[in-house]
Length: 287
Image (cartoon, rainbow, N blue to C red; front, side, top):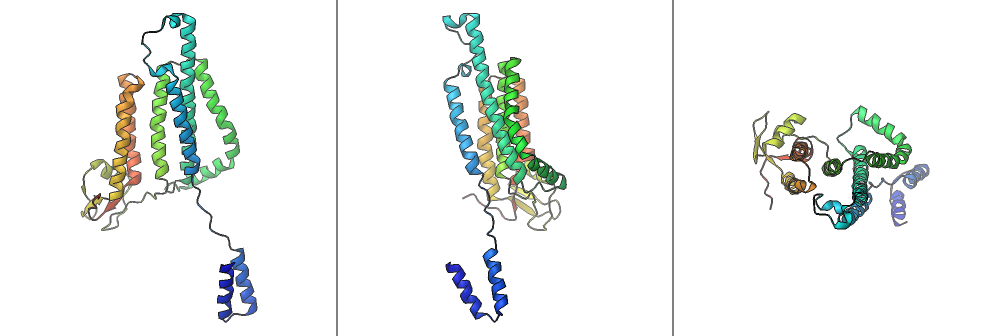
């Protein structure tokens, strides 16, 4: 009300006709407030908390955390007991896979609709199509996850392949999460000297050099990574290192573990790190 009264006082000072004042006041009264941006953290945070608690429950009540070749109790040496233990172990693996599928699906959907750099006509058309069929997709999603779990139980997929699936889904979850935090970036990286806009290939080359001092391919002037970009790279290294270290705890064959880690590192360098690339003309110190 106070704002409206101030507007009326200001209008009295202007040399306008009564009709113009009425029209102006109607425009002010009917003007819409700008829409608040959706805070997706409110949606994602409870999901991650629930997932962490569920993982903790499964790991504290699960025989699969201990190696399979561990000495069994005399009671579990019979075939029936071992088979039932295998079914329980597989069921808990399926529960983890289902949770990771749901998390990846939710994050990937948010990234797909909110990524600013994805503005091509084909992507916009695909967004409209997905949005048009959103209710059907929401209804079908739980059934798809349930069908995947049922097929795993039906065909009695080996625990080793389930562990591989969990490891890959954790890697994909990290990548999608990094895409989520980069959804507001435009993807345009320019030289601060000559304003040359770098292509995706040039951005990847700059990321892979990992040098403190770079050179613009056009004007040959010195370039430096921004303070923000180096802080992000430090955070990524803290994310990559534990993933590599704890990959052996999944008990996968060495070849599969190496292939998964190669995929992970290449995706980080070629896809994720260029999302955050920022260049400056002067070196910025971290502190």
